[in-house]
Structures are given as C-alpha cells and as structure tokens.
Length: 288
Image (cartoon, rainbow, N blue to C red):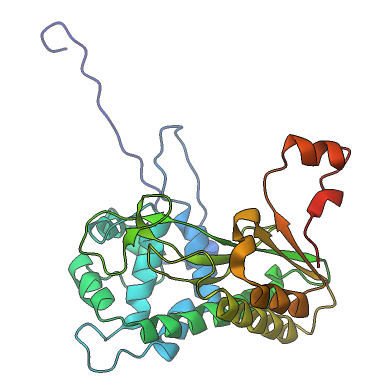
C-alpha cells in the first residue's frame, strides 16, 4: 500500500533452456499467461542451424577488403534473428542481447554498430551473392521435404512497396503510391507464402522494370531446386496481379515457356462473379 493505493508489481517471465542441451532438446513451456513472446525464436534458430545458413553466407558472400567484411555469417544471422523478433532498424537488433536469448540462437550476436558497418559494405554485386545463399537454402529446405513434391505449385509474381523513413537511404524514392520507399519484385509460393525469389528496385521503378530477367532467374532457381530433390512432375502455374499486365509481351512469352499455365489474378468484381457463375477458378482469366 502507498498513499491508499495498491501498487502492482510487473513481472517479466523468461523462458530459459536450463543448460547446454542443444537446440533440438529445448522444451518451451509457459507457466503464466503473461509470459512475453520471443521464445518462438527457438524454432527459427533450429531451422537455420539445420539448413546451415551461417555457413552458406560465409561460403558465398565475399566483401573483399572492405571495412566490416569479416564474419559475414554471424552478422547475417544476427540480422535475420532480430527481424524475426520485430526489429526494423539497426538499433533494434540489440533485442537479441536481452536475457539469455543468445544462448539459444546458435550463432554469435553482432553489435548494432558492427551491423551498420557491415551493411554499408554491400554493393549490388554483393546482394547477388546473397541471392546464391537464398537459392542454396531453398534447395536444402526442399531436399528435406518442404518443397511441393509432385503436387501442383502456383507461383505468384508481384511487386510491392516497402516504406522507409529518412531521405538519405540510397534508392528510396516516391513512386505511384506516393510513399517513400523501394519497389521490389517478389515471387512467392501461393500455398505457403514462401518467398522463392526477390529483386530490390528503386522506389520510382516502373512495375515492369527488370521483370524479364527476374522471371529467367526465378525459372532457373525453381528448376534447379526441383532437380535437386529428384525431379518434379508437378504443373507450375505462374500468376501475376492484374496491375502487372503491362510487364510486356516478352515477359509473358517467358512465362508461357516456363509454366504449364499463366494467368492474372486479382480482385473478382461483380461482372466477373456473374460471368463465372461464382466459380472463380474458372475465372482465372488471361491464360495463355
């Protein structure tokens, strides 16, 4: 009691591993409904360790003699782990230093200042090295059973706008949405939301900019991954949002060559609903 008021003590419950038992033997348990989040990072840390992402980064990413070039693997893993816990700035990466989080990550945690130096060392060519890391990681994941197997797979192609803050960010600009940011291309699996390929672009880039090369790279990546897991007889269907119809005839031609079916997906308006009799599968539309 203090001045006639009851003081409530706020308690933070921490999930601890209880010792060096290894990632696969950690049991996550909560004894209070007010337990905070972040314990779920154990699952992501286990997956990253099994896929060997840190070793892949050390193998493929070569920054030469640039400042901050050393230990690329642990720095990339620090960024990945921090983003999984909601970090959206370099300073936010310090969240990994709270409590005993570092003990269950499976990698050394780099300081935010070190991460800033590391990121500034990247050029576009170095980003392409990270593409190789992503491709190798995807291949390993599909080899372990996360791929589509022989089931049909639909790949969605689209662009998105990633908002940023601060006018000193290289490549950030105002595009058709009048939002300051970047305008990357994305290819995702429709059933899982898994990102298969991505290409960073400036904020003012037109929707079709770099689309043909992007599709070529995507096709090579997916074909390579399906071969790595013993082949895949599944039909590949590529879909793009209706706003992407002006990607160009060259891109559409590439899509036709790489897939069994190509179409544009988007919102189904009232006319389309009536024309399809409510069957939106038949109203796939724009197929070639």
